[in-house]
Image 1 (tube, rainbow over the protein chains, first blue to last red):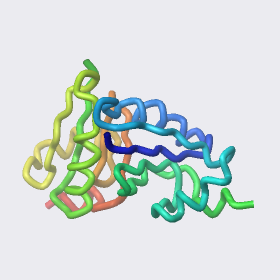
Image 2: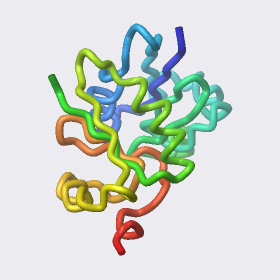
Image 3: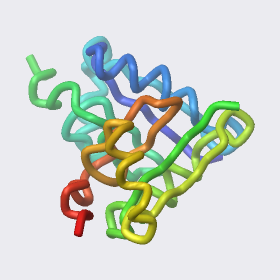
Image 4: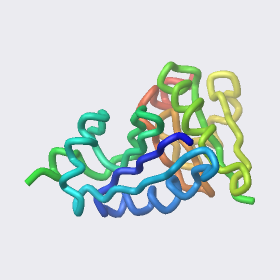
Length: 78
Length: 78
């Protein structure tokens, strides 16, 4: 099973992408995890290490795909 | 069956996204079509009407998701 992680931050652009893109992923191929970086701030380091620059972003087997543009990751750091 | 159209133009960013994103889509939910706008120039108008600004882009049920950035659509017009 491959791993898909959808990172978002609750912004409108993120929610739309989550509902459509995350839900379009083949569940037999990918174990899909949805991470809200605004709530799970402890996952920011992991997202950065994976190469995530902005949200929403989809990481498929370690490869980052930035989908549209909701917010820069730097805006989520407090 | 919902419709998913993946527009690309053969660029390296496009090919990577095609192989991973287009192939991750649930085939029971979406009828996936892959359109190479460099070869199928007659589909440029359709892509523009859907709201595609750059490739690669994934259109899910009419909603456009720009994935990373390979080339602006304007660069494909000759």
